[in-house]
Length: 118
Image (cartoon, rainbow, N blue to C red; front, side, top):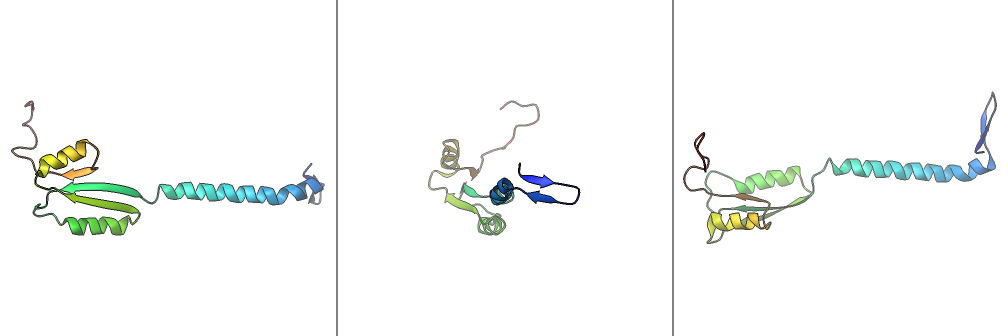
């Protein structure tokens, strides 16, 4: 028995006295674990490998990446610009998993006409 109860009060037994601090510690640990898990979904983290052409006009990559970093400081951004192999090299790096995202240049129309096959 952990406690004795009557119409007027509840009193811990000797076993209850021994268990009470351990029960409080267990509850505190469970709350801390719950809070830690809840924080995981609130803050982005990890690394994103980006690839882009060195001469992309009209896009301020430095500004965009700076803004992203300000909003998500736990995310590490790794930027690789295309060397002499251009978009083809970035596409290869993307397909083999060296990059997570690539901004490429496409020749011709990027999407087929409606109903046309690629």
